[in-house]
Amino acid sequence: MKRLIDIPTPSCHASTLLRTNTGYLLAWFGGTREGDTDVGIWVCAGDTPVRVDREPGIPHWNPVLHRRMDGTVLLFYKVGHQIPGWRTYVTCSHDEGVSWSIPYELIPGDDTGGRGPVKNKPIRLSDGSILAPASSERGIWRVFTDRSTDDGRTYIRSAFVNAPIFNGKPVGLIQPTLWDSSPGQVHMLARSNAGYLFRADSRDYGISWSPAYPTPLPNNNSGVDLARLPDGTLVLAHNPVSGNWAARTPLVLSVSYDGGNTWRRAYTLEDARGEFSYPAVIPSEDGVAVSYTWNREKIALCEIPREMLCERL
Image (cartoon, rainbow, N blue to C red; front, side, top):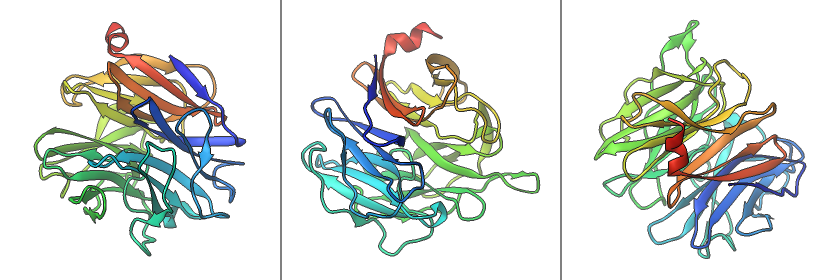
């Protein structure tokens, strides 16, 4: 099942989604064009999208939804005229996304490139901590994580993940997606400018990380996301295209049954000409739910049952 969300702006991008008591909560950034000063953060809790940011005249970017243990829904997003110096803001909802608090800065005064989740959702680890996938685009792109032990109220960042050298400089890595495999064991896949996704691993709940290393998964220097199902199956939403700034079609789901060591394409979401990009994927009741950018004109929402993933293996 695919639903195309009607968008009240000429352009939209970078959706995020969260399960609620009645369905799904969606958010994205929209305006005249990415980077324009009228671009804001839009949320859809039902049929009608509403704008929730309160910093007019500044471009907004990359919302990320997350739920605290007490049920509070957090919406992180970036604010800034230039990506390298954007800041992270947060607004909260106590009614499943119907109304939102006055936004506040996650790390007051921080202009190092934006703390907290940069595109993809945080994950809750076995020790109860929250780990947010983060990155910086100042100079060489670099990834790191932000860890919270107070349910997402404050964060301590890791060091940057070391990247291999390519053409005389480190590979540029941004927008990681995270999963854990056992207590303390955390893993990331990161977007790159080198034609493939790169992986890094942590043995201490994301406090420190191994150097990043290439995977066989092609990457077009566009965003990906991953969901871990209750049985340990990993579902990756991505464009299986290799090359720096390569085409953003097709958009597919790939699955791994061995902790991300091997992958098999399982389902094609889109394969027409156009742009189908920046997916967000979460577990659903019987499979996964995916949202993504549909030609920068709409946000698509799909529910894919588990048996449809298995049919295509």
